[in-house]
Length: 125
Image (cartoon, rainbow, N blue to C red):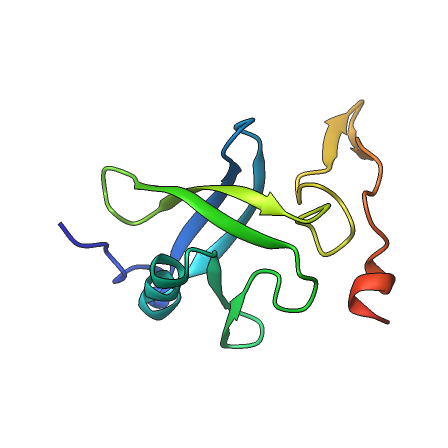
């Protein structure tokens, strides 16, 4: 079996899940190269669609994603990667998860506090 990179311009969605809690932390995209780098280094590495480049999560912040398990769906075109998050948060906006908003009473509401100040980690964005 091989992964099917033929869809989405050679990219696979990668759902990143906390290994201990099961919480979804983020969704990124991987191409064949970033997948192989992830497997070889043990740290989640993605393909940035906006920058058209490979990037390892945490290369700027130090908040890396240590891979514990990798699974694929029945079509071999989506990844589920369980990780141990190294650092206070995964989201570049300073939250533990990129999914920090909830649909409540007809509007999106912030549902948790920031765990780090993004400008302290990334500088002026």
